[in-house]
Image (cartoon, rainbow, N blue to C red; front, side):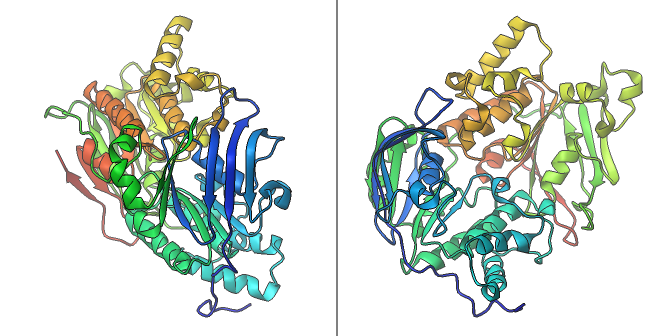
Length: 509
């Protein structure tokens, strides 16, 4: 097995052409169309940024182009051709081997237990010669800055590390058509910059066609030649060079939810006040996965009523691991999460004296709400409104009022009868927030709560979080979203990976 990737290239054989004429798609179990009336031609070698509000159908378009949607899974209108052929016919519904797609959710694309095997899986299925497979695996992992060896367990990876691994698996195939659905959403700033540099290098000579979706567009603009904006009902509503589209249409696009710049769009006017009673104490909790090191580096912090604590740091530092321990869903191997008197009030004495990870589920869920990094990990029913009803133990009337209030507030009321798994990534994220808040917990732990949000839905989420803090809820937020922490955080805790400098806490208010 070769050990060097220095001479292995990842350049594709040549770019593809994409053509949509009056294209539309509707899931079989949905009344409304995910996208409709799309007329779009992407010429070979073009690099296109696809924009639109949350729920506009951007991800649906990428999946259709990849050959993953057909008339058995939904209603199709109009036509879609890739290199002159319907992509479904060319792929048999499995996806074309010369088309690479990176989904919003990296977990949906990881199929093997070890990192190297996961990248090799696609090459083996594509019939690549055995002697070429492992050099291409290494070259792809090197290109995306994957920090571990080939034997690293995929279960031990952070969300951002999984995103890198999935992208490596796609790049190793040398696709002629590259479809990227928010490929940097889970990455820290350095990781995002590295991925964008790799994409620039791979597509600069126009040897591949690229269509990319990103909500935060400023870092992506130097990478693309063209911006296309879509509406779920009216198809393409703006199309042209980035400067032209974002210049002439900036006000209209911003009003429609598109991020046209990276400026903070709204900041709550939160009054300065003394910290409220303590809810939790983070007392140097750590745990390990498999044979890996204990993570994160020891942290001490108090979570008080009305406080907003942001956990920031690079991918793999242990932020989500820490969030899991704070929420009581993961067991520390050292240190712990110590509940305060304000949180244990009303608990049976036998429960109140325990660490939070040993609380019975009914007591834990009533006091600590959790938004997982992957929203699908907390979807349990076949209907949006039923998701919100799972947690609260209210009367029927109170449940209806609370569920309706949250769904309306988060722009999900019109989807109350929809299957949660047919929602867009941004809609799933807002639904996961609604489920965490339904029971009015005193502490809410939010892992990347603004993932997949357009400008309008981001503002609504931030307003909601500010109101929660003002009412006395303690918020713990894990995020790479600089604007979110700038808008809300009272205190920023920098989480460091093992062997790095100790964690640092910065007061910002």
